[in-house]
Length: 70
Image (tube, rainbow, N blue to C red):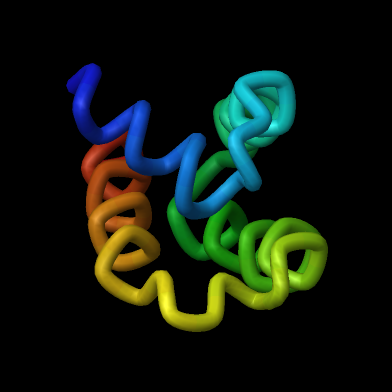
């Protein structure tokens, strides 16, 4: 939802709507959640201080991504 999107952009992507959209566009190219999660862990999180202190947002973000692959 919109509230999730705003929270993710602000808390996980350093207020960059562009980065958020770029990551989402990359995620839809993966075949399963395992590949998507590896991309997030290896390529996305390191660019944003590994989302330290943002665990609640990270968990919600991953839940939503996982549902897309279910």
